[in-house]
Image 1: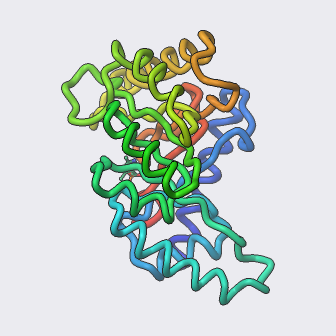
Image 2 (image 1 turned 180 degrees about the horizontal axis):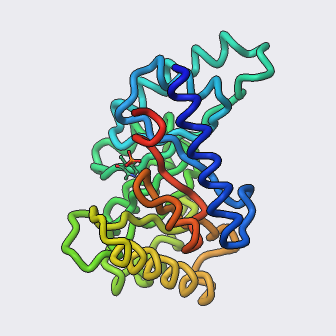
Image 3 (image 1 turned 120 degrees about the vertical axis):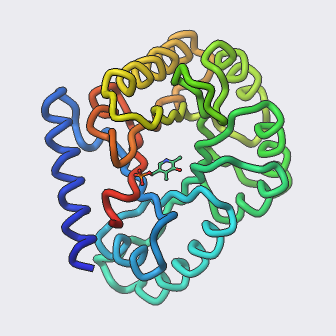
Length: 239
Ligand SMILES: *Cc1c(COP(=O)(O)O)cnc(C)c1O
């Protein structure tokens, strides 16, 4: 468990250094701790260390973990060092038949990449009387990735999403290609940033459109340089 504390400290120090290099404030950046490779004791440990934003890519694992953590938080309600509340981020590919279940535990969905999924989230949110935040996942690599709306179709999808009730479009999410070639990673972050600024500039969404979710364990320092406001980090903390 000491290892998790050390890892987290190292990541936080790297984030601070990267911010300093490009003149940004660490307060502009939310770190989502990705729990997919962690067990419940490891997850409780990061919460004890003060992490309040957790991310999962499977609905079922998110649900089980969120329920376990709710009990943990209520047992520790009098402990000032333990957060009162967790914000859950869904970062994985979303099947439409899982949306309703997801909305019970999750406040922000990073992986909306088709009209049909957006419509399902909107419909289920309306029924459940919730208004989840969503990010549109964009495929910013030149490679044919499985998920994410193509850059050329993104503005149009954003225009459609903002008309739907009970969902709030707050930004974009992207994944860089899995490569050690830093220039390719930079290119895809630059493309995401450009699209983010375009949607913001054209005022397609409201002022709440201000989140750019990009950067994982391999590339979060580069993502900061390209304007990321949400980092999604798993293995650098849990391994
Ligand atoms: C697993 C995952 C992450 C975190 O990846 P690490 O390399 O472990 O930091 C971030 N985003 C998504 C969508 C993921 O599936």
